[in-house]
Every structure is written in structure tokens, then in C-alpha cells.
Length: 520
Ligand code: FAD
Image (cartoon, rainbow, N blue to C red; front, side, top):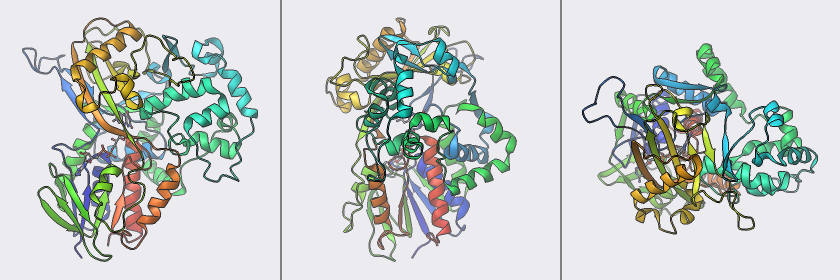
């Protein structure tokens, strides 16, 4: 058996897995990472536009930084600490941008409701002093929630249900559709009626299970979700540099001057300096043949094949499902969750005061058939608009531009584009649609100075109700003799879609494999 580990996929999960492997296995073990495309980073991609032409290189004309995928990371919890620890170890702290929790963009969150920007209260006093239309009835819903009988988790130990069903049961349909539906648009571009509460908004689930109510749970400080192991990892990381970690505790979100792609780019650079690591881009994996227990696994690519004693898949679960299709012991559930398509339109205007709101951006409520839509004027399929120049300042000289990102589609793709599939949608038409959105919602009529449209097919997995139970069954199948200590899985298909969760889960997987002797 060879001492060669193959990592499949060069998104943040695969890169992190390869990095933690390189720090934890002997130098005699070779680590080969396969990435199908030219670049690494997967959905993390940043582009600076407007850097050519006669003004190129002149001070103050650095162009505009557009994020095509994630734009910021939350430095909180175990995922946040693990991501920060990685950023420190990669010496990326100098290019880090931070937004304090006290900044207006961190405090001001908006929902577009009744054709107006509604500012969500950010504190107790603001809840009492200003009551936008969307907050009507919410205080009384919250008070009743504190006294509503909880679900009987004793008779239903998994107790999963859709995010919407939970919110409607606890707080009523208004909160479910408009507040929770919007939140789910912001994180998953998804339909709150389809997503698993337990796997997406775990804190709500835990609060009802432990305290009998979300409100009572929040008042009592909530339920700790970090495992004992995660707490150990957090404690050890913080001890390394207490000043840095305590400063980061006051941050709402973090990013990088050259965009989120700074992180995968640096990971690649570092991996390429490590002797026993090989990063192979433009080499799509086409087949994974498990063979018999104790044998090497054959990983076939478009350029050849290698044999590995262990394979870590950091690919989307449905892709792994296809690669294993000839296996005589298929893994369950890899193909269960659907993925949504999202159109991301980045816009930059040379007027820094274009938008009279100092907040993160707005989201839109969920529309259900049994209720009139919350807005009459927003084009169908609008998920939300991020006010990037507020949300992550520092990527251009201050006071030059307003940057906005319009997100369209997600679970409402068909409504947004009249049933045209993503492959047939014309990017220019999407740009026009995005301009309609900013006109209808923010009154912006002027054309942008720069614009970039990206159509992301199958970009966010939708953890359906029962995800947790299916993952348990998948985990059990991975413990069967043919897979145990031979194939592992990581990535946004399983235990969280945020970038910090992807990094944390890659690190946890590698550390668990090393501790169990699964890589020797
Ligand atoms: P991926 O990024 O999907 O990586 C998988 C990699 O595998 C890709 O590079 C792909 O090319 C490669 N691959 C696929 N098939 C093969 C094959 N056969 N052979 C070899 N290689 C293959 N998260 C946040 O924390 N904050 C945000 O603000 C945020 N915003 C987001 C906005 C958008 C529009 C999107 C799409 C996501 C956002 N996310 C955000 C989520 C986060 O970006 C992703 O969940 C995360 O980047 C996924 O990383 P991954 O490595 O698990 O998967």
C-alpha cells in the first residue's frame, strides 16, 4: 500500500484539508490535491476591475474589487477561531480587513418589506423606539413564544422540521415568512419551507429543546454548541496570540483588501512550497475505484491515474456520488440534497453617496402561495442586495465608489427568469434585471461605472429536513470495512456552508484521522 493521500477538489475545504494534512502527517506521506479548474478556491473568487486604460496604476485608481462568491467571514464560534488561526498561520493578518460589531454596517440590517427598506432593531431601546412595518406584532409574537408549549422531543428524538414550520409554530406566519424567510434567502438563497431547522439554524432548535422556547433560551444565554474538542481547539488557538483573538472577538465580520480569494491563493502558495504536497490544477477527477479493503484506491483523472491509501473528497456530494457510481457498495444520500443556482451581479458607481443607508444591505421575504407577496415593486426572484462599500470598506480608497451586489434566483430561479435554465440565461439580461432591482428598491437610476455578472450553477446545497439523520447513516456507511480509513468526506455538502465551517470541518477531519491512526 502506498503512502499517498489524494485530496479531491481545490475549494476552501480541499485546500484546508491538504494544509492540515501537511502539518500532521510525516513528510514521507505524499499529498496530492486534484482540482478540475485552472484556479483554486471554488466558489471563493475575487476580481479587481477597472485597472486598465490610461488611468492604470495612477494613485487612487486601483480599480474596484468585486467578490463573486463569499464577501465576508464571521469570526465567531469554533469555525471563526479556526479560520482566524489559519489566517494567522498563513501570515495573512496584514491584509485583513475588520468590521467592528459597533460599526453601522454591522448594526444596521434591512429587510425590504411593503416596498420600503425596513431597518431591523439592533438593540432593546431601538426595538421600543422605532417599529418599522415588518416589526408589527413581532414583540407580542416573541412574548407568546416564551410561554408556548414546546414540541415533545422525547417522542421525536431527531425532532427535525423545516425552518419555516418551526418559525410558524413558535412565532406565527408573519415572522416565518418575512424575518426567517429573509434570513434563509441571505444564507442559503433557499426556501425556508424546504430547509432543515436542525442543520441550518441549530441555535433555534437547541433553544427549544433545552429551554422549551427560543426567547427563554436567548434570555438565558443560549445553548453552547461547541463540542468539548472544539472548545479545546479554540482555547489552544487563543493562547497562541491572546491580543489578536481578543481584538477579533469585537469584530462582526472580516475580509481581505484583495478580497476573499486572498485566502485560497495563499493556501495554494504555501502548499506549493511543501515538498510532499502536489497541487494539480486543470485535472478533473473522473472516477474513484475503491477496490477491496486493504488495497490502494485508484483515482482516475482526465490526465492519468494515481493510487492512494486514503482519499479525502472535498467535492460536492453529488459529484462524489457520480465518481463512485461503479462502486459495489454505494454510499447513501450523497445525491439527496438539491443545489440552487444564483445570479450574482456586482455593480460599482462613481458616486460614493449613492445609497442613503449605512447598513450591510437588505434581504427580501419569502413569498408563499397562501399570502400576497410582501412587495409589489421588486422584480421576481430578488433575494437581496449587499451594500459592499459599507459592509466591507477598505478595498478601494475611501469615498470613491458605491459598490452593490444584487443576488437573484436561488430557489426562485424559475420566477426570476421565467423558467429559463441557468445555462440559457443571457448575462446582459441579468444585468438589466439587477439594475431594475436597484432602481425599484433604492431609486438608483444611473448606470454603473463597472458591472460584472456571474451565473453560479448549483452553488449552494440545500440541507433538506432530516439531513442530520442522513449524515449519520452516511457516516455509518463510511465506517464499513470497504471505506473505513480509506475514504473520508468534507466540504459544504455536509456540516455547514460557511467558509469558517468548511475550514473547521477540514481541520477536525484531519485531526480525527491522525488521532485514530487512519492515515498510517
Ligand atoms: P467548492 O467551493 O464548491 O469547491 C469544490 C471544488 O471542487 C471546486 O474548486 C471545483 O472546481 C472542484 N471540483 C468539482 N468537481 C471536480 C472534479 N471532478 N475533479 C476535481 N475537482 C473538482 N460563505 C461565507 O462564509 N460567507 C459568505 O459571505 C458567503 N457568501 C456566498 C455567496 C455565494 C454566491 C456563494 C455561492 C457561497 C457563499 N458562501 C459564503 C458559502 C461558501 O463560499 C461555500 O460554501 C464554500 O466556499 C464552499 O467551499 P468547498 O470547498 O466546500 O466547495
